[in-house]
Each structure stands twice: as structure tokens, then as C-alpha cells.
Amino acid sequence: MNRRDFLVTSAAVLAASRFGFAAERKIRKAVKFGMVREGATVLDKFKLVKSLGFDGIEMDSPTTLDLDEVLRARDAAGLPIHGVVDSVHWRDTLTHAKADVRARGRAGLETALRDCKKLGGSTVLLVPGVVNREVRYDHAYERSQAEIRKVLPLAAELEIKIAIENVWNGFLLSPLEAARYVDEFESPWIGWYMDIGNIVNYGWPEQWVRILGKRIFKLDIKEFSRKKRNDEGLWKGFAVKIGDGDCGWPEVMLALDEIGYEGWATAEVGGGGRERLADIKRRMDAVLG
Image (cartoon, rainbow, N blue to C red; front, side, top):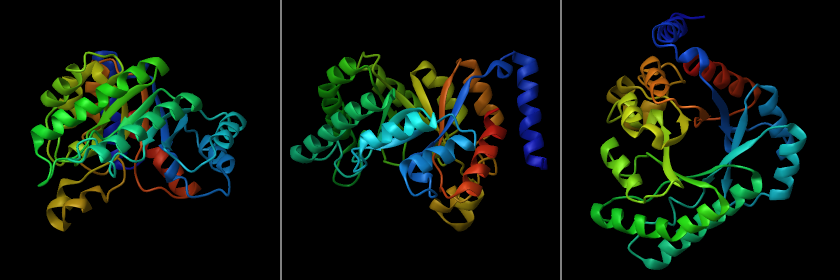
């Protein structure tokens, strides 16, 4: 154990002894399917992930994969699929000025909901749109909510939740606004997919956790370094391994314990083969407990 791992572990133990939370923490660890770069078949990849001690995996949808093959791999490997990521939300945005583009995005979300149901998952991760020079902030707010409302009846019918992720899309930039955005739907079928590393560039993850509270359905796990951002450029901030940046994991975990979070935490970092994935698992274990 290096010095940083020791400090992280010590902080977690201190939190557990002080507040009585961390010792009973129930967080299941997963990877994104696209991170698995070893294995000739879906089953090979699932077996690898399972052998490394991960609790599950997250798929993409819409997808060109044969879902029946994916289901056979899931059952043969004994590896749950906890959810899917909407694979068209950056291309066919729900905030686009053109109605036909928004319609394609809505259709993609509907497909993702149906695929998630078939695969036995519980959430669809959704980027609700983007704000840029062509898309005004207020228009993005109105358009994305209007499109999501059209899909909520299907989500309720399938009992699959839509989980909005905080990303660098120029939209929903504060936890207060994020909470308001979700609450305005007045539906239990929409909430938040909390990406810890994405927040560090412009905020503090533990603050988002406490403000969003029970709206948080799931977690994405990555790291971000403010020093690398400042010294080498914005995107270089992500060029650190989990636990080696500025996420402030002891504080984050204490906040998650305070809101009673139990559920999935999925790595969203550069993938690889067995050695790389094993290192990701060790680092997730260290920071999440």
C-alpha cells in the first residue's frame, strides 16, 4: 500500500468509526462494456470482468451487438448487466434546433429503454443535450424536458429509470439547477447519474452529492487533476488514475454515506486487458471501500 492508498483507507476507517456508515456500505462495482479490450467474444469479455471481481457491467444502446448473444453471455458468466448508456445522445441531441434530430434522439432513448429491460438492467444513462453558440440555454432546458416527458410513460411502463449524467455539455452546471431540473418532472422514473470526476473541473463532488441526495440513482467513477489541467491543458486533467487526482474520495464517500447511497458505481476510464482492468478494480476498491 502506497502513502496515498494509506491515507484514503485511513480516512475511510475514521469516517466509519465516527459516523457508523462506511462499515455497512453496499456499493457494487462495474465497468463499461467498451472498456474491455481483451476477449474474442462477448462471453470472453464477460468472463474476464467476472474473474476480476467486478459485480456487473454496463452496455450501450442502440447497439449493433446481438442482444440474445449478450444475454447468453450474461447468464453463462454470471455477470449482471445493471444498465445501458444511450449511445446516440451526443449525436442526436434532445436540445437540437431541428425537430427531426430531436425525434431521432427520442427514438434512440426509447430503444435504450427497451434494450435495458430485455437485458435486465434498471437505468438508461442520458446526456440530456448540449448548450453551445447555436443552442441557447433556455431553449435547451425547454426542449430536453419536452422530449423526455414524451418518453417517461414508456419508462414507467417498462420500470426502467432515466438517469441524467453531469457532463461537459454547458448545461445544468450547478447542483441546485440539476435538482430543480429533475424535480420538475414530478416522476420517480427520472433522476441523476452522478459522475464524480466530471465535476472537479468546476466544483466539489461532495457538495453535489449532498444537494442531489436521493435523486442520485448511480455513480460513474473517474479521476481529475486540477494541477494537470492547469499545467498541461483542460483534457489532461483526466490523465490520472483513480485515486491520484483531486476528487477528494474520503469526503465524497462520507457524503454518499450521509445520503444513504447504496447501488452501482461504474468505472468510466480508458480500458484495456486483464492487467489494466485489474488495476482499475484495485483502485475502485481503495477509494470506494
